[in-house]
Image (cartoon, rainbow, N blue to C red):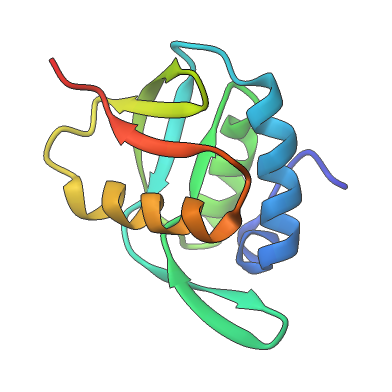
Amino acid sequence: MADVLDAEKLKDWKEYRNWLKAELQRLAPGEPIYVTKKKFDFDMDGKKFPGFALLPGKRAKMSFMKCRQGGIQFYEGSCELEGKTILITGLDNRTACIKGAQKTFLKLRLGWKVGVQRR
């Protein structure tokens, strides 16, 4: 498995899930996090699932830049951890993309959740 996702690999559900599973194990508080601005279609064995992608961690910067070159736009924030919940900070007025990322994380079934850091 490659350490860097590009726009095509990001759309592949299995590739994204495997990459994200590895990155979540390395995740530490205060690291950057990138959330797609708009829904796009993941490819789930020929079926489309419209969702928001989330790229967490220091190593996600390269994937973020590759995907951005492929035309996918992201919001940038930072994350805090509360158990197996990723609390996103810096995206105060972006509730639609946060809710979409929450739904995508439920569909991934990795045991992690996404939330918003309350001030």
